[in-house]
Length: 320
Image 1 (cartoon, rainbow, N blue to C red):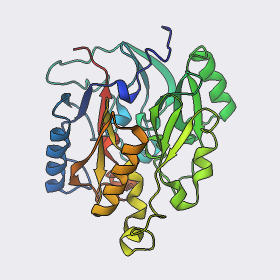
Image 2: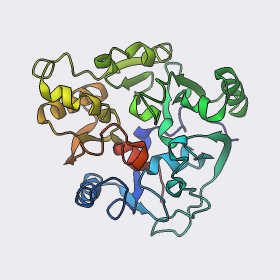
Image 3: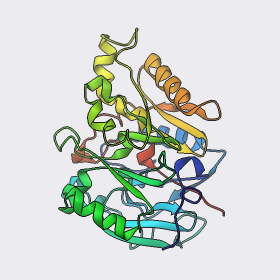
Image 4: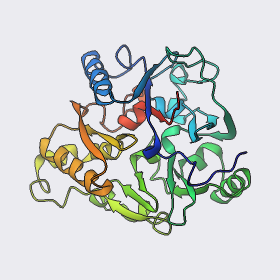
């Protein structure tokens, strides 16, 4: 394996290309056709200044979860995509290699991959650089359940496989009842070296579980809504609280961040403001022009229909 350092490790702020499933405007279980078309159009419009491609031969719309994870410009991490929440819906499982997922530009994705023997979802991989300048991958500990591993077994294997070049941090999973999907991209996002943004678990009195494994290696910024005048105690907040996790599941391409929109202008405004403040003035942060409330419902496992903008997209650094 090549040497991986903070200089060649591809975090979201280094990406310049965004891809999404060609199925999005045409078919997706559980989602209204008009909504799909509106979301597809808004997504394409929001990334029109970047290289962007439809992915063909996919089996569902959640590209982040089945496409390989870019480690360096010329190395991708491949894994087994076989989530437990699709155990009864295998028709939705995409194997990007065997199904020959491709773009119109190329009928085959010629990627240099390193394969790990783990059942994993790409949405459960957050890439970061920690305070010590070390490449880091953050995952929800659901990966342990999916692979019948202890934390020690996975960590020991991981450090040996990556020759201690990539740190692994595991965030405690709430459990299947509260979080059946168990993806880190609904919990935490990387800002810059030694700094991350976590979702509004403080509104749920559950922040320590998320922040504890991170605080040794990162300074932590937090989304928070329930303590803000005009939001706390309101009926709208009680209705949208369970969907507010979606704000952390923004799409980031380089220094451009597109935030999911909910059905409350005031909450949207504050979410954008907090994300902008966390990332700083050099970033452009804006809402997608589409109300995503229905897709940000508590993810409906039985119809595979819940997720945010990061879930829908596959981003990478491409020289082509």
